[in-house]
Length: 126
Image (cartoon, rainbow, N blue to C red; front, top):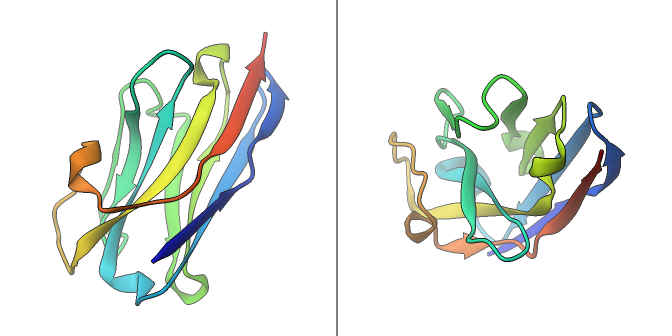
C-alpha cells in the first residue's frame, strides 16, 4: 500500500487549501481513511476520518466547521478541504488507511491505522 499526500503550502490566515491523498496497492474503496497532523515539537493528532463508504465522518473539535473530508473511490483519493485556516493549523499533514475492510466504525487514534503517507507541510502565516 502506498499513500501519496499533496496539496500543502504556505497560506495566509483565513485562506484555504485542499489536500489530496492518492492510494495504490489494493482496493481503496474498501478501507476507512483518516487525516492526522503533527506540529513541530508536538505529537501527531487526529484531524478527520471517514468510513470506507464515506457515509460517516468525524472531525477533531479544533477543525469542526472549517475542514471537510471526502473521498472519491473512482480516483482512489481522499481529500481534506481546509477553510478559514489559522496559524495553529500549521503542521505536517498525514493521510492514513485502515487495514480492516468494510469496517463501519470511525477511528481517531494513530494506532488504529496501519498505512501512512509521507506527509505534506501546511504553513499558515498570521
